[in-house]
Amino acid sequence: MAYSIERTGKTVQEAVSVALAELDVDEDKVEIEVLEEGSKGIFGILGSKSARVRVTLKESYSDAAVKFLKDVFEKMDVNAEIEAFEDDDSVMLNIVGEDSGIIIGRRGETLDSLQYLTNLVVNKGKEIHKKVSIDIENYRQKREETLVKLARKLAERVIKYKRNITLEPMSPYERKIIHSTLQDNKHVETFSIGEEPNRKVVIALKHR
Image 1: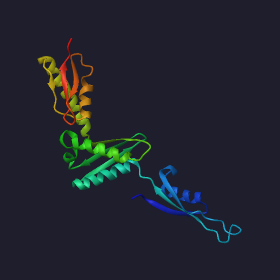
Image 2: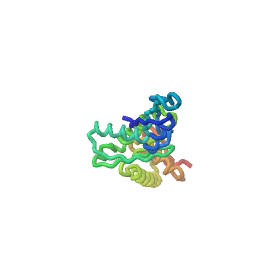
Image 3: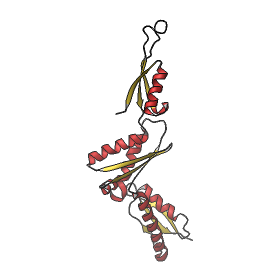
Image 4: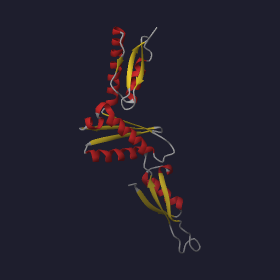
């Protein structure tokens, strides 16, 4: 639930200023509802009424992401902490917890699904789209390093034995790592075959 406060002042702007100062935010970070316009009364003294406003903090992209993930983890009976970092273009979430294996899933499939769903939830109805990235205890970097080593090792086998190698099914993100790692290799080429979610990368010897 969004946090709101009501404040009064001689004018609407004064009431808003009081609320903004208390919340320590700029006006673009809140929604303002004027409850009473206020009036000066007779001769500016008798019967005067203060202006009253309700100022509500807008939910940030990172707030929405954290809230969604906490709800998901609660339903999964998973205990995890979420660290959020947000800039003008993206939201980065790092998850720390004892149940990391459950959240990551087989070959990162659960983590990728959570990231996809969080992107949809966070950007729904927003004019500005922010890319949401989710990692858990540096899993993605470790997985990328593993895939880079695997790609280079298998490329050497293809060159040595002159036989194509088909890898296990991978996500688009992981296939991209394999393709990028070997794109400048003079002796092998890569391409994908099959349909999602069973699409695979093939490492093949270049024909001269």
